[in-house]
Length: 512
Image 1 (tube, rainbow, N blue to C red):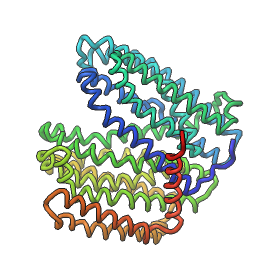
Image 2 (cartoon, rainbow, N blue to C red):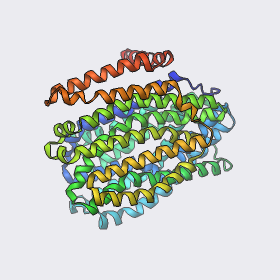
Image 3 (cartoon, rainbow, N blue to C red):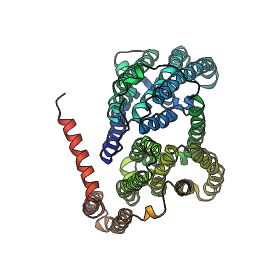
Image 4 (cartoon, rainbow, N blue to C red):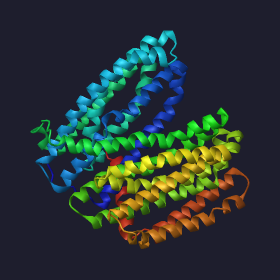
């Protein structure tokens, strides 16, 4: 096993790019495959397949936070070069995940007849296929949880190239394999079986990579009871966050559906789903940052942690702020082109307010990742629990009196408060200082973003037609990018961007 993981700016920048590609490429495949799947499977079978996707996408609920805990403690061992403890952490997590998966499989299998026969309105002709599909899915849970642990080991060592080499095709297979099955005339159980086999292949590939980078894992494969309590303690708090977080992001639909006409839910959901896709950028970043923060904390590199936090914040603002500001200024045009005049009329203001909330939410992911990397998932969980009742009360009042814009305002206020509290917690732990946020690079970033925002009304002045507005928006964005490159980024950051671009160019041009 290699000694300490070297957390360099070039490594993190490259891995951020890899994570973005690993998420964006499957999204493109999904957009292309959706129409064919709907036509080929029909609404009923497609609806059942969508439930399968939901389960495959949310299986981490069953891992009680151990996937995140594996990354945390494996990265900690790698940061210290602790060869003796590292395999104990890895195999304890893997075997316990397998046991959790077996228990979960039995519970899900027992619930399948009840869910299919009494809770879901499944056409009689599809009942048996649905049950068989869910039974196959239930049997795959140990596989899914073990995969999360093994992949987490690679993430802990910053091996995101290998992670995404498998993860991107695996995510794309969610849509490609059903399309292939539909083309071959296969039934739903066979399609689900194909999806499970793809996950078995992914587990094997990630395991091979783990053995390649960490040969010590081949020689110690035992369960260690002394390691388990720390994994469960960390994972327990992560589980609290994993349970509360979906409530915080989805409960607004419930209040809208109960307080407003049902049609209003569509006018809110469409802009929300559109703007939430921007999460791929900060989400990819914090996937890279979490093990990096952990490795740096393991060697007490407080200065490096602070520098990484500030540079990450600067990068995120320079990328996201222009996109979200343009969304605010072009919200009506975006919705008109995408969904028509009616959605533009009802949803433009909602989209504008949600864009501000998404910016706050994205920035907050940095201190969130930092706190968990420092071993304080209890703080992120407690803050989520604190926010939930206040958010519910705010939603009820704002939706009742202000309708859909009120729901968007509640979301934005919650995200802003959450971000401020997370940064305050990071300062309280003395992992970052208020002085560090007065860094000259951050000041220049805020100034550049402010000037960009001030220039955006020129879009409206340019013309009432869409094409001239789009051209003006592109021109202003290019000017902002040029200014950011020349005056905001320092020579080191420009070097990182160029080195990453060269790396990807060489990778893409390399013969297969």
